[in-house]
Image (tube, rainbow, N blue to C red; front, side, top):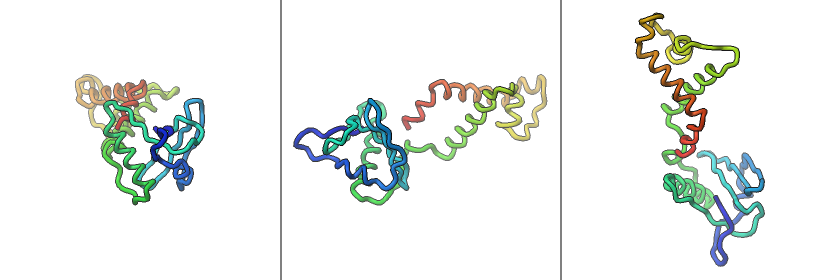
Length: 172
């Protein structure tokens, strides 16, 4: 978040932001200006609460449980605006390979569960999405299997993410 810098203090020149090579999104509304700046090391998301350019800008950090991640984001943007070369994203900005695979699995499950024409059983979900080539039989063997319990837990997790749990992903 950036706001007009207090009088007498130097700040970020709004022209530096306007001159960014790739502005992926730029939207103005009643809450201010929202921009996404594309960079080779990842995206920079800005919220300028003053919709008009009023001179030097200052970074505003919210002091909450994620203040360290916010500090890292500001340092990263500030370095790039100062001309530093791209660097790897700090931990928390992007999911790991394992997390991406798990989130993809959860999205696939959610798509299957919410498909209007399909009413998949947990057995079908397990065979089609979670465990390709599942060899567990039907009936009592399936009902007592760890694969069934895991499939049910994954579906429950996917539904939780859909119903607001995704916000935790935004916090790194």
